[in-house]
Length: 148
Image 1: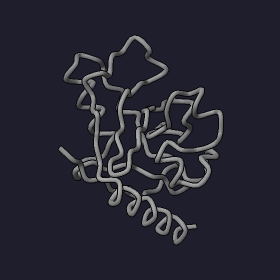
Image 2 (image 1 turned 90 degrees about the vertical axis):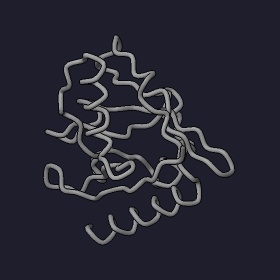
Image 3 (image 1 turned 180 degrees about the vertical axis):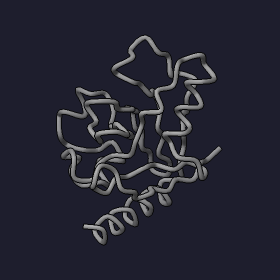
Image 4 (image 1 turned 30 degrees about the vertical axis):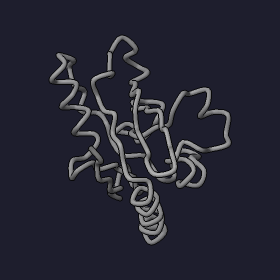
């Protein structure tokens, strides 16, 4: 079943951040609920990605998993969430692999690198219509530009 995606722009440690919202629920809330359901102690420490806190490059190729930067290939995915308290993706990230086809984008194989023993195989995958997905990335980029 296709999911809807919205990137909410919200303040985090004095800068705008990007919070993915899937079917009207923030990704941070979805992953915290999953952690609770699977018996993990949720940290409730997930926040949006600081727009100015890390060099993601242009957002469209980043969120499509198509960045040319070798860093992402080595990471095995992209950051979707960072730390709620400091905004740093190195502090408390949520990483996912992004697969893109002609008409779909999928977030899958989630991981929390600071808790490698946790199994996130039951979380997701989240599948989006590619045209709507790309449109939302572009709209979020414009909203970010207006907050700068």
